[in-house]
Image (cartoon, rainbow, N blue to C red; front, side, top):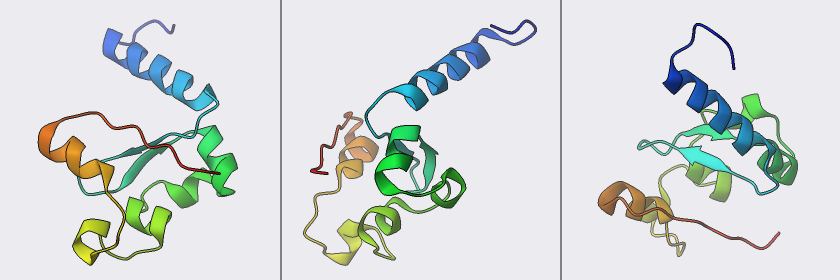
Length: 96
């Protein structure tokens, strides 16, 4: 760990490093449905570059839909609704 950084910065750094190096694809999405983190495995799965994914809306990235899925009536259950509304963690497994 680097000296001169607070403990939270070190934890965040270590967490990002772990997430980047696990074999499963991981996206982190904020309350505005914007992708704020993508790991190496997800980039390999989708064949895109990090700078092309970060900042995209998840519904555009995952479903090529210009609005959040639940607002469009798409027959996809949006796992983020549970996270944002009731605080339950969600894991989504898709066929690749």
